[in-house]
Length: 335
Image (cartoon, rainbow, N blue to C red; front, side, top):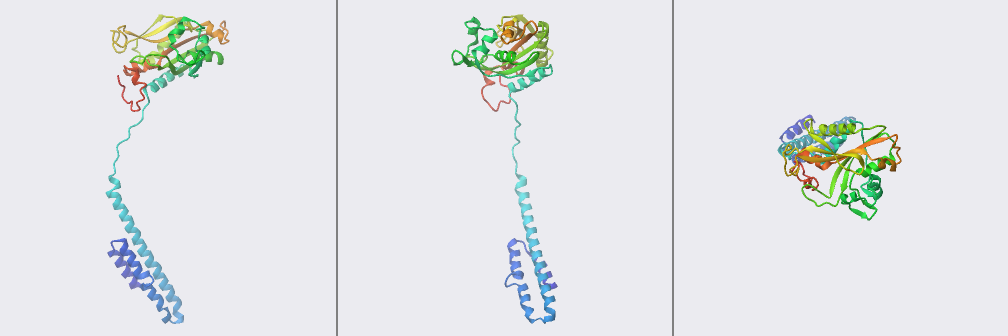
């Protein structure tokens, strides 16, 4: 039987395919194989030796089966390795591009973080608004001429409309929050505007409201100045000028020196050298009283600005339509 084992080992070494190993298994372990012949000879063995003989043949069968199956496994493993070396390892793919935030999202996140460091909380409100909160509670009563400047888009005239300014969220906050509080509100607004390089019917505003026992214009101006310097850098130049806004009294417009022409005058700033960036002021007592706030105890200041304009001036974007065009591949900032 030892000779049979050596014989099978030699044939295994000479076998190159799985089929050859299968035929080898049949030759020795099949129904008509050599091991079967050995089992048939048990009839010729004496009764005393039959037990030992049968055990030896069974041991031989197991050993040969293990040898041939191990050889098959090794052959299959080698074939797989060869396949991997020739095919899979050579597979290549293009490097996937990493996603990026939209310039408006980057701008909102950056400004939110600036004000969070100053103790402000981010607040939100409805985009579908009522006349009461959008106009009346913002000190714009019925038939007030300043309403005509809003270019409102009505959903159900005269009471339901898309908000034209984030001041409506300030009106909600004054009513719903307990003073003192400091909030900022980024959000979409809608106006019936002709779409061109500078204007769009959908744009974004950022509103700040601070209600404390005592506030001042100097505190307001310092807050605005700090925000602009944090966002644009210490070299930014801004100015404040008296301007009427129904929600505040007194009111101040905030201008920034045009970053495109450095104050020399260009198409973007309409040859003025300055860009109007924000409106600000001390919250009008009428707004406070309509919200049920005691104006003898509490005061507040507010300011709001266009987020689109900040994103455009920060990233040298000269057409607002590129911000809202829906291009998912908006990787570089297009002028």
